[in-house]
Length: 192
Image (cartoon, rainbow, N blue to C red; front, side, top):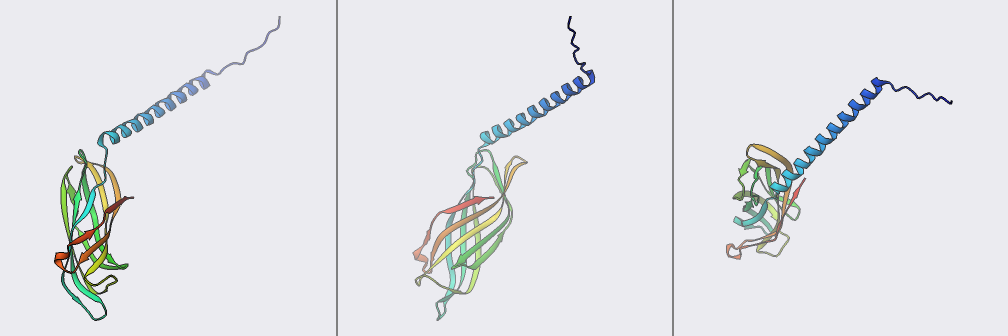
């Protein structure tokens, strides 16, 4: 009779392997559960970026110099709409800038504010340009408007997501004649 000896299995190693396997299973299940809940939460809330448009832009007290340079006070009003049905938005560290021909012509800071869901806010800005060269035909000023800051998505007092954002509105054509009105194109928002 041929006798083969079977290797002895150390019971201590077997218990360690079972503990390690159960720890890995619990950790994998926890990660899967948290990921699934986060995706479900995101799908239920469906966060949307704010919709920003230029409502008004005007030039006050302007004077043209002999070399086609402009001294003027600019006034801008932006319309900020929160389209979210369940999320409020909080804006912080807001900076508004207006450019003409690559030159900064207006700068203003904005106080932080919270915007409830499905609401509309109007933001007013003012800037003064001194000796600004005009590059277009007389009677109009072509501008690029920029709004930068931080945007927080909130549900109640819980802050969900924080983004840096940048809004560009161009071209915004402001007529020196108040009857000329405002010509504007869309505003584009970029979240970082």
